[in-house]
Amino acid sequence: MSLAVVVVNYGSHELLGTNTAALGEVPVVVVDNLKSAADREAARELAATHDWAFVEAPSNLGFGGGVNLGVHTAAELGHEAVILLNPDARLGAEAIEAIRRGLADDPLALVSPVVATSTGDIYFWGSAVRLDTGRMLRIDDVTSPPPRTWPWISGACMAFTVRLFEAVGGFDEDYFLYWEDVDFSVRAARHGAHLDVLKDVQAIHDENGTQEKLTSRAKSDLYYQYCARNRLLFAARHLGTRDLLVWILKTPRQSWLILMQGGRRQLLQSRSGLRAVSRGTTEGLALAVREVARRMFRRG
Image 1 (cartoon, rainbow, N blue to C red):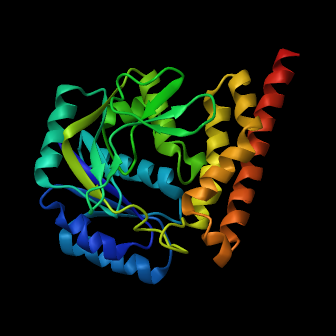
Image 2 (cartoon, one colour):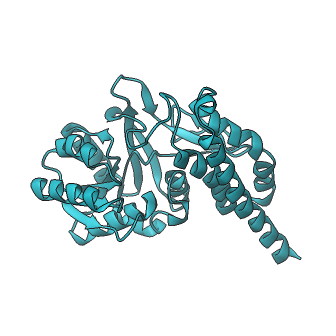
């Protein structure tokens, strides 16, 4: 099975030069979401040096838009499967080969290795979204999730065949950033995909390596905005009306918990994170309430 690694880049050419360059002989497709002319030129030079396929997005298409461009390019180059890999993640040759074998054995699998940080902390070995609140839950086995949850595979390092990707319809670009891997996992499962975390295979992911942080714990404003917004976009896309209404009612608490992932100390330095999560919450509530109204209109 011919396999390529797809990396979506946004102003992270330094990470491409360390992490992506260490992938070795595996074919690589780099999709450059435009940040600046200088950043693009630096990424283009790296791609030429390492003989990577280089796709120049006309603007910043977000993660989902970049993934769609990259997978379509990989398919045009004749590859049957892809591994999505963040610029701030690393994957060894043995891990790549193990993932390739897994996809060859099961072309309908959606596969991830265990993802750890460079200090050895586990970042991902299985997750599920709780249908009562929208909170994320770490689980040991994505094939047997707890009741009232949906398992998902992290986009930090996710592998699938082009066949599955095309059947599912690719990534939903409306998310722009965050939650699109949850959405894709759920839609893939509905198309018969088997979610699988390879517990004996590991990738290294230094989380937030592509983000500018306010403090050692704080997330970026984009993280706060889109996590708050896309929790509700996901609910509007996938939940029944009763669950959707519950998520709407629990939004203030859940949005606060999203902000608190960066700790309380960040609020002493800047209120930009609070404004960002408020902005995302407002946008998400508008989407969710509009969806409830649409359903009520159709019934009435």
